[in-house]
Length: 98
Image 1 (cartoon, rainbow, N blue to C red):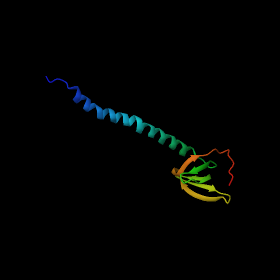
Image 2: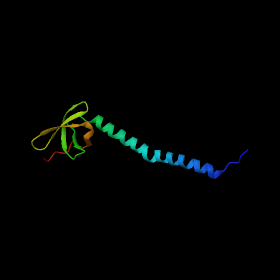
Image 3: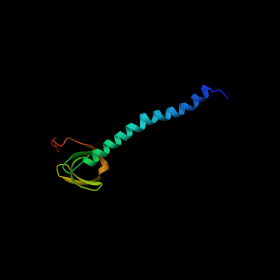
């Protein structure tokens, strides 16, 4: 019966432990962030004041499927974006100084 060589076992276990570590440190927090973003996008409604990933601020006036129409600027210009373009939902109580 061959003896166990701990150096061989260690060299076999090290990549497995590294993979487990990477899953815990990288993938799990990313999944949590994706769930948080999905919940935010599902919760937006007309009247919410948002910022897009391009830095445009505006108020949502209409949502149809995955598209939303926002109103922005002093002239109330309407623009259509994908819901995935929302970066943050700003405080709705803040008055817009445009």
